[in-house]
Amino acid sequence: LDSYHSNTEENQSFDIETISKFLQIRHVLERWEISGINRKLQLKPHAWVPIDDSLGKSKEKASELELILKWGGELTKLGERQAMELGDNFRKSIYPDVGNGGLLRLHSTFRHDLKIKTSDEGRVMKTAAAFAKGFLELEGDLTPILVSLVHKEKSSGMMLDQSGNINIKKDMADCKAYIKKLMNTDKEMTDDAIRLSVPAGQESVREALRKLKNPYERLKELLKLIWNIVMQLEERVQQSDIEDFSNDKVRREEQDYDRGQVEIKFSTRRQDPDEENQGKFRQTELKTNRVLRANSFLLEWDPKKPARGETLLLMLDRWKNLHREIYDEKTRLFDVTKVPDVHDNARYDCLHNFRLNIKGMDELYDLVKVLADCIVPQEYGITVEEKQTIGSKMCSALLEKIRMDLIISRRANDSEDMLYNLDLSHADDLPINSLGRRVRTRLYFTSESHLHTLLNVLRHPINDRSPVITNQALQLISHTKEVCYLTSFVIRLFENIEAKKDDKNRFRVEILFSPGVVKHPLLPDDHLHTAPLITLNKNLNSYELEGSLEAAMNLAAKPHVDKSAHEREEVLLRQQLAEQMMMEAVPETFFDCSSENCGSEAIIEIADPE
Image (cartoon, rainbow, N blue to C red; front, side, top):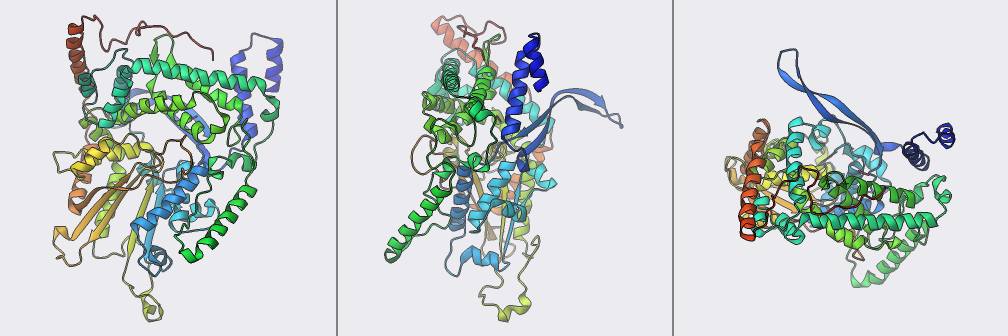
């Protein structure tokens, strides 16, 4: 690379852009140690060709692959502590301690069967370990907890990672194409057009479209706000001595330093001390906070540097990439699939880089939040039929596992599927009152896509089955804007031991839901708590839920969604807008965005992770 760089200086015919990219790669490789579970190798198919297999059946084979070697997606200290707090609160709310140690005593005496499964994403695995640390009141680092308690098996990967099913990708691609047409419409949307644009009836999406009014105009505002961030960062980079932060290797302490190190209102063993011990508890808390601050890297957070060892140059580069990728100057169309990336970057900087005082970041976050609210839920299906089909296919393995968990828990032999049990041969010597008590807990940690699709499966029953969540809960979910970090679904199974064994009402299911960490990132104080669990249904027959899950699994085995669904919705939108424009005498087509001249005005081209 050094040789290539010197040759470039001598021969200007070399690609300057290419060498700058190589230097950026070397910069990242030298500053961070690429190791551990955050390394990931991905193969993404981009093109397919039809072939015949050995039996003469037609199938598709990937003809173009993108190889991605990435490092990143690390769990921040704030995210780690949020997961620990959730684990602690989860134990206290779901397994209340009525004396004698509660769940922790059950777990320590082999009467609690716990299994934790995750996808293969490093940050998901660390989240599971941090949750387990708070859930079981464990001490020490996350690594031994992850190794001993968190399972990432091949079956877990198939269940909790996107399966790569080509039909799912095609269905979602159709949905994204529909959303792209909708969001690139340079026309103020009426209530009727909004209603037709969201046929599944999700009120949060409709409300977001009402706020946007003209989606294309709002996207142009977003582009200007991103460029404003880029200009501020370029000015700061020019004023800084880049050599000071481009050659040194990032230390572990610096890489870990984020807002989670300064949020001190946290304890995995939070108590409500009585008045007599109140002063003693407060002194201990203050002492703990002083130790935390003393052990943190940089007692005073340098307001000129981004958090977690990132440099201003790297921060500038990621915002430049977003500005370049979200808008195509030739077609004058926005790539709305990049809106979630802009949202994630803005949320991260609001949380962890707020001390940089970047002007306009708050305005950018508020706007991109509304855009994401109407884009992300629609990526997993526009119509009810699409939401059912995509949801069933994407999480079919998870649905099957949940169904089997319910069936096993209902069986008389409650020792099935339990690796370790209490040895009752020494019952007389054990100071345990309820020797026969068993608690089975299954925890699954997965991606946002699985949570969106699982929510769609639960809220849209298949084959006209009875809904598994109440009408009141349906309205509440309809107004839920997003599924944030640590979004939770909880399914609890209860047994009425007084009912007859053949009575279907002997087993009752309760379903709960929390949208996760929903607090605005720029609000002060505590960012450690998730939204409380709300009840979707507390009196559901177990057989009814199992039947709904089985219906979704059967749907997943059928051919993918009817492709004409989008065309039908587009025709309705065209008709609606045509009637409106005839009244207004405005000769313009609603969805005609295929030509390069689409759009009402040009945006001047400006020069220049997951």
